[in-house]
Image (tube, rainbow, N blue to C red; front, side, top):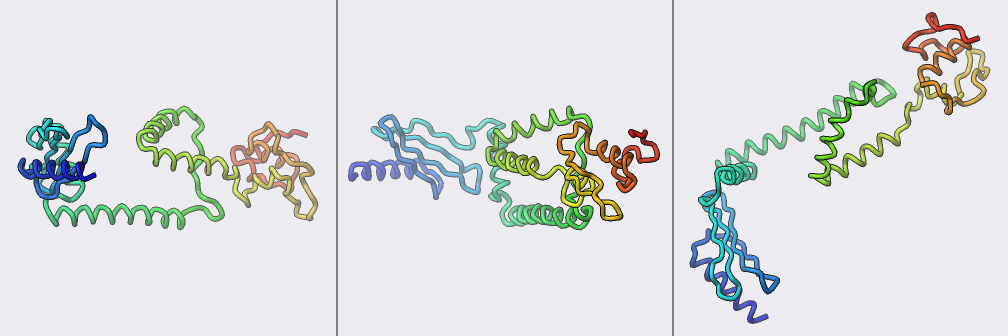
Length: 234
């Protein structure tokens, strides 16, 4: 332990001699082939520097500074400094704070606007497009993003599971009542005597069928045709 402490002190002394900017971090070697690493990323991007020392001889193996980066590396590091508020002082930090607050405001206001404008008694989810092929590109992009950013991918999976588990028709929807066989006539008699869950007809067509068969079922259950245009099935 004392030997390692002594070697670490020597590494720090070498880093000081090499002139690393104040506040640099030191990583000690954990394996026989490891190295001592001194790195610093100050507000002044030109002072960035990474130095690797041989743990046995103390000789610098790599000494790289911002000046050694290529054009793309320099642009990337400068952009990171701007993003972290290290460039342009307080002005940049205030601009970034305003952008952060604006994003929070957009997220909150979007939820409030949706809640106020949604149809009464439903979530107001837009209908699925008839051509499912439009989702191929979108799903591919979401899958790639989910792989690159696992936490985002996990949240997308959770939302997809919730979406699939939500009832196809929310409570109170007339088509839901049709499927469950609970529509009653104006005289209180039961119009439907069996559920239609296993019916091969799509939901809207089942509504048409019922409106054609029984006058007590409103024709609004058939939004695509209406009872006046439907053919009699009796």
